[in-house]
Length: 502
Image (cartoon, rainbow, N blue to C red; front, top):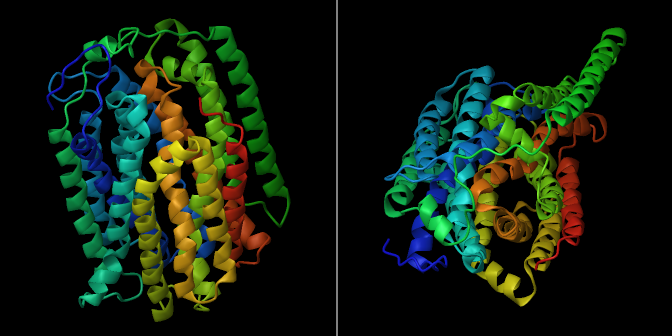
């Protein structure tokens, strides 16, 4: 990449934007395989529909920890050859590819849960710095295009990965296997995914050169040394907040334990994740207070949590409801449609597996629509504004999810996928485009990691609460859980009204 530095960050060519975005094709290829097939894998190995949400929970818990750490490290990293973000792209790709090779050969539910954890953690290592990468490399006027290009590759990667089991079946690869064994269509899909992941990331790593800290300073985007650590929160504030949150979490956990010990109709064990998470957050604040004098990376990340930009706070609420809706769809679409349309809950039946393949096709459609809408999104943002474009997209997605309940013909769900595809494209681009202009360049990575809390937290809540909701309020009728997801996306659209695009 040959560039002239004039004190203003130069615009990149379309080819350069494409090169820096190709890696997301591999990331989403793996993510698409995971989303479309993991619930099916769990049920094939003997997990009940009620257990599926809790089995997903280890992965987001890991992401909650990994994302800000990786963001912080990538902010502080600079290598003359490999740059700031690219080393993390490659390390994550190597471990994710290994996990994809191993995943389809597991034989027990607990093994599948561990592999999901490893896969999701590795994907996070690659994915988290990619958002900051756009902020580093592109001027504000090109960031919507940059994130939209990521959306294009995300959509394209997900289309192919979601279709893989279906296409392999059409080519004669078996889609059925003895009870407790994954079919060859799934195994081969994951192996292909591993190869695609490492190849796509390698292309971006070797075709893109990052700006050095000195170059970023010349553009006026860095105003301090990347290795400098500044802590603004007093130790007493960490201690006070930590004590309050830790006591609340411990009290709730103890109350839940004693309640379940004394009654026959116990509350769900998944609630311990919520109460324990509150306590853990408090303990992290207390540790930051104890380590305050050391001024290490952990204390700096905890300090950054206390000084979120106002735009980021507003976008966090939008992200929360948007991603809660998406996780409801990803976790429950296969069992919901198998039950609602095919009339079966038997994961070993032909009807269930055929519906599982069709869900892969549907997911391919919404990702295909997202790839196409990636070219429309910058136009909508320029014609109206970025928040308005996002509102339109979220409303389309919410109505698409609610229509799952209305449509009884599985082919009509392709219409639903158009709305979901527009929402998915916008969720992957617009919040980040609005956010990057509000973030200091020297903390782009860590704030992007913290921003991803509001992807991970709704995933934890979805895995924790949706099973309870499905069992106790919907009598196991999972299609209603999809409707709840649609309502959540409409709520996200309402909260987007609070955001002003300067």
